[in-house]
Length: 85
Image 1 (cartoon, rainbow, N blue to C red):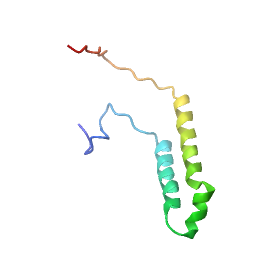
Image 2: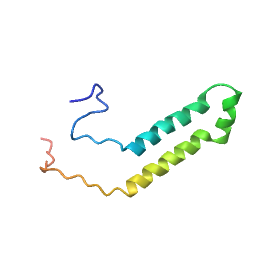
Image 3: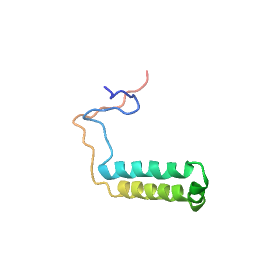
Image 4: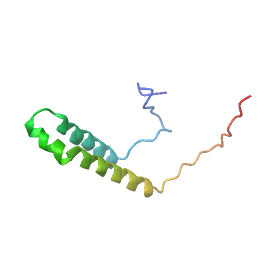
């Protein structure tokens, strides 16, 4: 069963982002959207690489998070793969 969108299922078996990752993703979205606004006030943000710096920071957080994860997924049952007929 989904939560109204097939691309983002909900339920006890689904995984979600932790609070820090959610805040970083929201910040990344805002920081990369600001330089896209028109006008000379935002031109220097584009040329300075404001959005690129935010993207590199988000990648660094994601790679560090994946490299330090200690959680394991344990299933109650083993589901063998089925061969095609």
